[in-house]
Image (cartoon, rainbow, N blue to C red; front, side):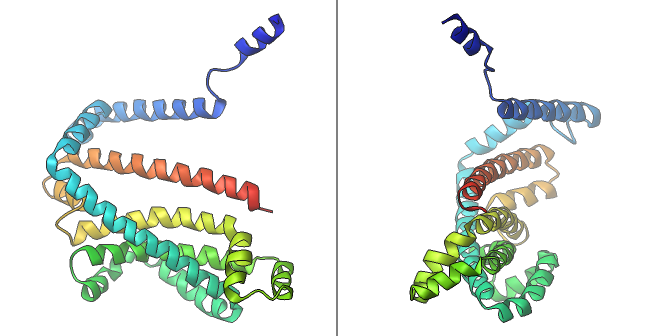
Length: 260
C-alpha cells in the first residue's frame, strides 16, 4: 500500500509534453513583454494591453458581422479546396501520364506568388464574396492536389490488383481502395490546405472587400492603429494554431492506424 502511494505521489502533475508547451508559451509571453518595453507600446503593445484591446474589439457589435463574413468565405473556400483537390488529385494520381504532365505545371503555379493573380481573379469574379472564396480556394487546392496525387501513386499495386480481381466498380475502387490506402498523406495535404486557404481568404479581404477580418486589418494599417493590428493578429494566430493542433492530432492518429 505504501509503495503504491509513493508511486502515485511521484507521478508528475502534468505530462511532459503539456509542461513543455506551457513553458514555451510562458517564454513567448516574456519575450513579447520585453520587446514591448524595448521598442515602446506605440509600436508593439504588451500582452495584457493586447488582450484588453482584443476584448474591446470583440465586444463591438460590428465585429460579429466581420467575423461571420470571413468565416463564411473561408468555409466555402475550404470545401472547394479539399473536395476539388481530393477529386482532381485522385484522378491525376490514378492516370500516370496525366499526373506526370500536370505535376510540373501545378508545382510552377504553386510557386508563383498568388497576389500576382489577384487582378485576374477580380476580372473573373468581381468584388465581393466570390472573389474572396476564389482567392482562398486558389491558395489551398494546389497542395491538396499534389499530396493526393502522390498518395495515390504510392498505393501498393497489390491493393489495385485485389480490387480488380473482386470486380469493383470505379466508385467502389475509389471509396474502398484508393481513399483508405492513401488517407495518411491526404490528411497531411488537408492540414496544409487548411492553413493556406485561410491565408488566401484573408489576403482577398485585405485587397478588395468592405467587410471581414482582413478588411479590418488593412483599415488598421492605413490608420496606423498598431494596437488593433496586433490584437487581430493575436486572434488569428490563436485560431489557426488551435485548428492546426487538432488537424495534427488527427494526422498522427491516421498515420498510426493506416500508415505503413
